[in-house]
Length: 196
Image 1 (cartoon, helix red, strand yellow):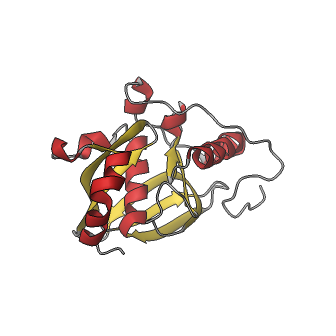
Image 2: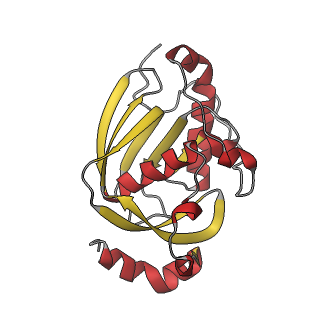
């Protein structure tokens, strides 16, 4: 299989998929590991996940969110208007990701989710992580992430385990709509975590 540098295949048509919403039981199931032999037949799914994430303005998308239970996620931040404060993140496809915290430090993150429309809430994520995974061509990789990028991958791996960010919010008083986050909370939160 040719190396695609993690980007979507150029010759395959891409289509957007419906994103499951909170309450759909598939979001509560654990996705299963993928064998390298399965990857050729999953390239179309990966391309469709990338197209769906980009169309929806997400920073990441897990296979559960489009009704598939293969252990695959995609992530990318490139001038995303939904997350103008997130650092750039090149398109990354992870198969069978395994996360490991790097240290005990946590970061308070106010998260949202394409499967939980218009709602945000505050939760703690590890400030630094290491991830071992296969890329879309089956090559083993390992990467380290910090800050909001680390939070993105923790959020998506939670999806693969059937966990929603709603489950990790300790104080329900932090739930808010996207509009009220922008209006009342974003600047103070960014100052708390040391971002301009």
